[in-house]
Image: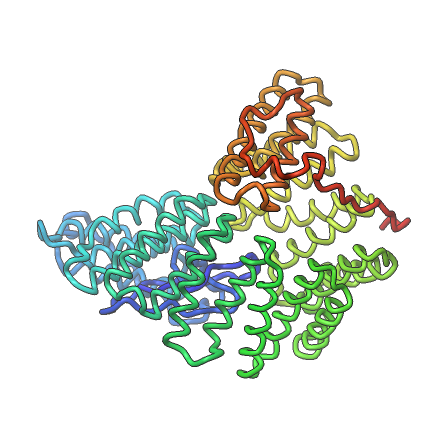
Amino acid sequence: MPGLAAKSPPDAPPLRISLPEPTSSIPPRTPNKRIPSPSPSRSKPSPARSAKKPPPDSPIFDDSSLDNPDLGPFLLKLARDTIASGEGPIKALDYAIRATKSFERCQVEGEPSLDLVMSLHVLAAIYCSLGRFEEAVPVLERAIQVPDTSRGPDHALAAFSGHMQLGDTYSMLGQVEKSIRCYEEGLEIQIQALGETDPRVGETCRYLSEAHVQAMQFDKAEELCKKTLEIHRAHSEPASIEEAADRRLMALICEATGDYEAALEHLVLASMAMIATGQENEVAAIDVSIGNIYMSLCRFDEAVFSYQKALTVFKSSKGDNHPSVASVFVRLADLYHRTGKLRESKSYCENALRIYTKPVPGTTAEEIASGLTEISAIYESVDEPEEALKLLQKAMKLLEDKLGQQSTIAGIEARMGVMFYMVGKYEEARASFESAVTKLRTSGERKSAFFGVVLNQMGLACVQLFKIDEATELVEDAIQILENVLKLREEKLGTANPDFEDERSRLAELLKEAGRTRNRKAKSLENLIDPNSRRTKKESTKRWGFRR
């Protein structure tokens, strides 16, 4: 089975079916710059394989022959060969099902069969390649029950790989909490087998850290990333590629928590490591991140310099119409919008849209959708809700048939709901919010602040439609969620933390609209904060004065 690598980003290319191979030790997950998951659970068949060797003949077996101990390995090989031939996963699925049945029948009582585990992993991989993730879950749950980790590294590897593959499958289903739980169990098995300081454990820690980032659980993500960094610094040369990848992740975590100076420090160190290894495209990507930090710090001239450096490299190495170039255009458009230079902002938006409208071969739908979503936010800021809505609708259409994008789609639908509300289309707004709520519930985000905000927005749309009872219920649910979130953040971060202040302001506004007050006493530290000191920074609405 494969080891553990970094987690797949929205713009990762589609993967092939990767069938597990027997091995005698837990291998490392290969670190990747943009985190493709190596697990078969996220794999897809590759069209490039259609020109390979002809498919094997299709022997017919009756169920009675499955008692033959030689049949399971033969059928499993047929499943592999069928996939390799490019014939397609349907026939391979039949072989894998029969192989699994044969291994189960021939299994010696009291002796866990690693052949059965391997067959179950392959079967689950094929289910996932067909998009049938729900059917893969019970197969993998069965697979992780078979190995006995006390029997040595082969069993430990089988258990580790099964947990990681199951975690990837839950992730594709949008069930983030279950996914993280599986990764944590896999990490525990790996640590027991290899020790806490093995470099392969470091790769798994980073993988799990990225999962926590996606779940907005930044404290746990930071703890794991620090552990990864310590392991790699102990086993790698100074300024290694592994350390650079760790620092980029740590910078992302620091940025998310508002610690911009620390994020900048990590990015500069990562950039130095990449410069030393001659990876100029990676240096350019880090320059974009550095530009983002400078913009957050309102150091706009330095941000422009970083973006322009990256733009020069991307144009020379990838071409003028590459999505990497478009992404920098979007960042520059946002920067110039923030600084009031609307003509320049408009120009960069148009340049980015030109690239996204006619993408070069190899551009993924996720890349385009991400860019369109960012541009839509700029249109929204200049009071162009109709144009913002069109871009969001295009992004939705690109992602609607993509697997593992449920949370992203929910976020876009919530934004679309806001746009519909702004233009007075309240029925469409309610429908968009309702769809987003459904997806967020499925993905395990029903306790997040974002979920509470979406519920509240849906309630506002219901008010406009005179559905008062439904609106009241939604707002009450939203208040309860935000109160719970605020309580947890107050206990964990303290009342002086900016995140707490944001949530308190949001809840206070919601309670004010509902004619209520917060139903608990504030801690003593809260008395030191001026209750009227809530953030009042609002960017004035400016229009470009154009329509597309």
